Image (tube, rainbow, N blue to C red; front, side, top):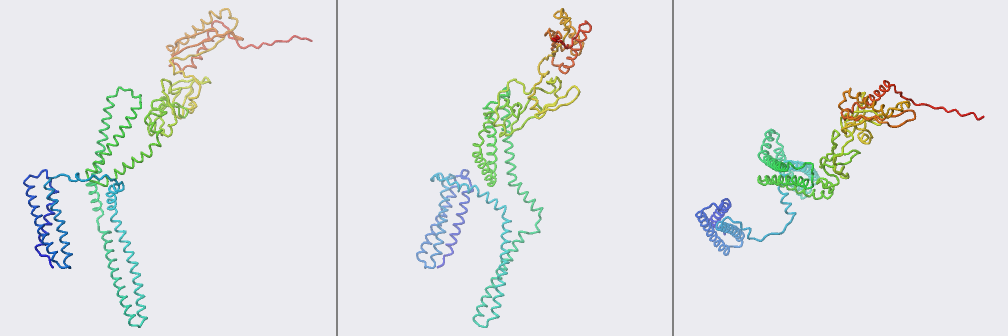
Length: 555
């Protein structure tokens, strides 16, 4: 039994109009439709539903009276019509209720399958990677197919040769007929194989078309990249830079409000706020970048960024417990703290900053040390106070134990260089110099020169009256005639002791530190002046005597 033509026409018309109606309903915003337009659509859809109902009634009547061989086709037509009728009824309902989300009326699915969620995230990534490797995979597949067909042709040719040999050797009619049919089958297989090989070669040639303009292909690829994913990356980069500059501006404003605060006071809350602000800046940049990818609809970049963020979070979760000590140092909560004094490698250092590579500096030395956290986490610092950082500074004059006067010309974390009066430069390790014992004539406001001078015992009568007064006046007059006259603060001459062969006097001259470079010269000037005074006054200068006692002869 044949289906009437008008029934098929009505079904096709209903399906076409229904599909158009569904598309129109979802493409238009019902909030902007007028009431009249909705009414017209509802009437049109209802007319289609009525037509479908009539056609379905006719089909059911035909199915009841149809023969057995016509039932499958009529039932298939009925199923198609029911499907179209369901669509029309759904469309009618959507137009009637307006643009509302009916999904909220259903049950809430609380089941969570992380594998399914991860597969949904990975699907666009895998699809894009698959698209990138589509052409190489096709070429590899065709090359494998061509090689397989070649091997099959060799096998088929060998089989045909064997069949021909067997046909030439046998005379039995039935056997020859069977071999002939087998030969035709293998020849047909050979023809199919050659056709398959030809098609594969043609497809491979199209994929490896040497006539393709490489420059045009590359330019088209570059153009497509910059119009698509490249533009997305550029927008994400610009958005990240804007957020970074905005946060930097906020930070500068906060610093301006607290500019009167002592910057050397690195409190714990300051460090916590600094690292918290950096973490917030990074989080905002990450959110903005992912948002740009989402708005642009680039699922590949969005999925990769989400996976990168998740991997970073998991990595931090695993790594942070192992670096608790380093974290305390970064937050200025550890045994070593910023702006304090610490001993490292035998020298004192000021902790300038604590970071992945911390900075140690000695104010008196040229240069700094950059040390990793793993190197300083075992050190212990203390408040520095106002104590000196090094026993000498550049330009200081020091008096060594050998009475040699040297000027310090260079100080580094490794070596200290000194120059003596003759211009000879001496270099010593900084740690050794720090352990030396010497006098620094430039560190204090003043320094003193002590000398001892003796006269003969024959002047014992006036050794406590005239002689010390004359010595003091002579030394004072001699110093006033030098370029260091204004540097002299005090000249003392006192009787020190009665020695074995002389009456000894203690002379002590106090000077400003700007006369330190002439310390030995002034010392020699004192001795010269006292000798000159003794010569003028006729005072004898003794020398050591040797007394020989002769024992009496007892014989």
